[in-house]
Length: 109
Image (cartoon, rainbow, N blue to C red; front, top):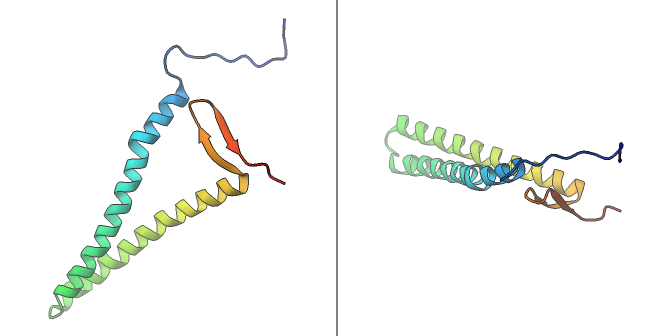
């Protein structure tokens, strides 16, 4: 009888880690790519609007606004990506395997 060991209960079928990995792989990652692409398209639309409407000052201002908000969106997403990379590199994490419940880490010396 082992009184001090950790008791682990596993659900039949798929585990919570498996579910989280599937949600991450099929919903979150494609959503991030979609938002990044939309921010770039929004910026490019602003550039196009600015260049094609040189005679209309109101549309030029709208184009500038679209470019600024596109750059802000791209900057925020790149910043989050950089912060996550910094955290993972600081902790020495190379890759997280949710299915196995393991983390590949480099030895921190």
